[in-house]
Length: 361
Image (cartoon, helix red, strand yellow):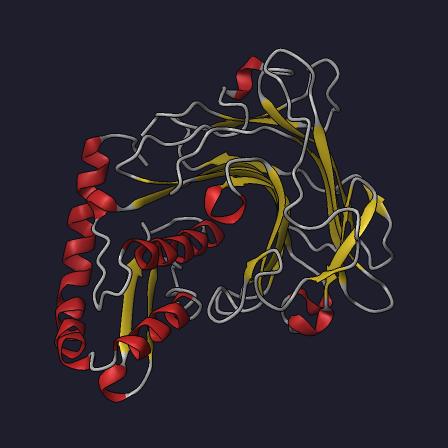
């Protein structure tokens, strides 16, 4: 992925070629369809939650809601080879953005010049597990109303068609929690097709703690070349109930009921843990900073970090060092990077540094 105008034009050409014929067919139906604006708006809201999990490569999305003349269509596409979870999240956010920017309209188009970029720098542990824990350094990068910047840990399982995941960390996202770093969660039980949302905006996550609610302000935040603050995130599968519990700063915050998931997904454990940073931005805006807004090579007190990674290898709620190495990668290394933190003073041997400055794109 290149962070320049040529890259954007390549996206435009690809999208136009692959989507033109299908969209023209759909537009004929759309032109004849909208008799009831109220029904149309309701269907548009529903379609945000019904975008399919993608084709076999996980980059082509389509959905329709409603019947007869009130039927509403949506069509979207990510670059081939894009990370599946990140792509799904981008499709979800793009759908919401269209609804926000096109109120009371029967058509909404987001062409590449007004498109989005989702960029990440993270580590991945692709082996069977029943939970994991990390410490995330807390930062508060500046974002516009249509951007977010976050750091989190994700636990996932299931096939491409039934991708199931739970995630927790901090996020700066004005749509969700104004312009501050706050605790957040996100989950899906079917590859973002019909289920999934932030925090408790839909039924799913069960809040237990009265001291640490989801959305709580995380403070103090880390200071560049100064004091560092971090939040401890623990997610594990309970041996007795099968529920996935979330602990934050050793506080039992709540859980995702095992009934949300299938046996082929998170119902019987997980197959993936990933952790690190992620940003989202329309391509017509300067991209936000990730983490501290500085590259990982600057090291401790200057770059964002994750440390203390441990996993539950057996269904016994016992955390230990991972039996296999983690893989580190960034999908836009010219903009955001990740590197191991070994050799850095005051940071654990199993740490990583990640991030990058705003304005790359």
